Image 1: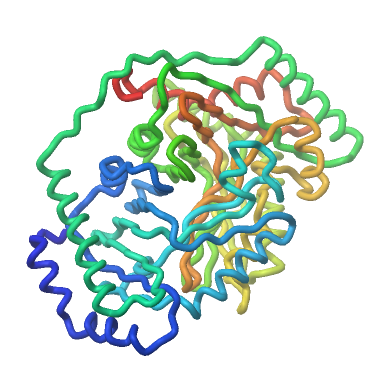
Image 2 (image 1 turned 90 degrees about the vertical axis):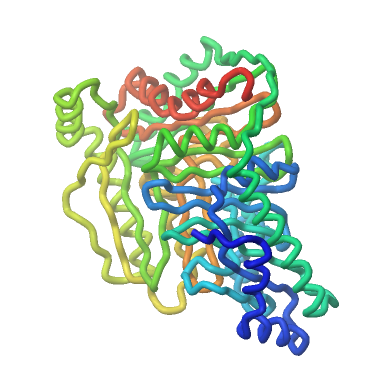
Amino acid sequence: MDDRTPTQFIESLESSAFTSFLTSLNDNNAAYVSITLPVACIDPLAALELIDDGEESFYWSHPKNEISISAGGNLIELRSTGKGRFHDIAAQTAHLKNVIQAYTAIEHVMAGPLFLGGYSFNDHNIGKLWKKFGAARFVLPEWMLLEIDGYHLLTLSFKKKNLTADVIYQEVISKITRFLNLAGELNSTRREQKESPSALCTLQTDADKARWYENIETAKSLIKKGKFEKIVLARSLDLQSESEIRPTLLSHHLRNAYPDCYNFLIRPDRHTSFVGATPERLASFKDGMVQTEGLAGTISRGKSALEDATLGRELLKSNKNLEEHKFVVRSIQDSLSVLSEHIEHPEQPGIKKFQNVQHLFTPIRAKIKKGVQIHDLIRKLHPTPAVGGYPKKESFRYIHEIEQLDRGWYAAPVGWFNLQGYGEFAVAIRSALLHKNKARLFAGCGIVKDSEPATEWNETLLKFRPLLGALNSIKPDHV
């Protein structure tokens, strides 16, 4: 924790390393400047709530892994659509390595500029609200707060234009003072929430359940015909509040209730956001290695330790769930084998427990082949059979045809990456699209030949719980 006063902190910027960096800006052709400095202890989500100026914002956390990121503004935007979107993002990223000059006062793999965002499930986004997110979209924010490994870091990024080193220095002083004062405000004041009585109502109809049963039977019929072996079908649940839903309050609840999950908030404008707490990591990239996991096969948690253990053993012996999980692991292996080597994973799955469900779980690790980029691997891994199907291509083409659902960024890769080959992406399940006073929740199930519609319906109810619980946890004066 850095507890220096604003004056003491600004004086520390007179270090020879920082002044040399500023001087060098006058002699190079960099288009952008990124500066990372230590700051006082600030909860990134609290800072995001306090600033809340309607600009584009982002939040990412994994409490158990002790990482938290908040960011605002849009300095650089990487965007693409269509089948070549992963390659396009990789190419745009490679170009930026030559135009961003970065200074970091702390040596850490996450110090420096990070690009935040994700991809849509399909190659194109078709929904009115989802278009704000794009089919592939990453942003270099103007400011970013990072809490990790005991560090509290602030990264400020600027478009250099014709700015001199002196002007950039004054900009840094101005913004760093703002965040240092913000830390003081967070420690000394309590923000009162405006009262706004609100009721949450479900817009689901009886026809939704009948349609779900019909979709399951359609999928099972196609499996029997040999079209594919597994397919993941999803459905949505629409909710409406009397007043606008605040996404940061949902994120606060989710990170406390689900510390084992990746909590994310992507907000392209004041009234629209995508929020979730997903248990599924798509991939982490570090030191030339990729780590991913097979997470498929679901059962509820028990009300007692004995019941919980019994349910876990039942899951480990369930032919239906074991078969579903086997497809996931096999598909991930197939995807990784082209771009990596030395793939390692246990032969038998274990159990990964969350607050309301437990899943079959297999950790997978591999060494990335030389020259392979992060987005190349994301393209290969997405969609995993846990959200798509098996075989991937054969099942993928039937998903929208059966569901008739605009998934947008649901079940797609969201996360961050930097210019040194580090990054982390999660699969955006257990999520909701928010717009003003409405929320659309998503949940899906893996369908195999032995699936029962009633069982799969109940599984979606389990998977809706995280966001339903978060929405219901927001008191009327907080919505």
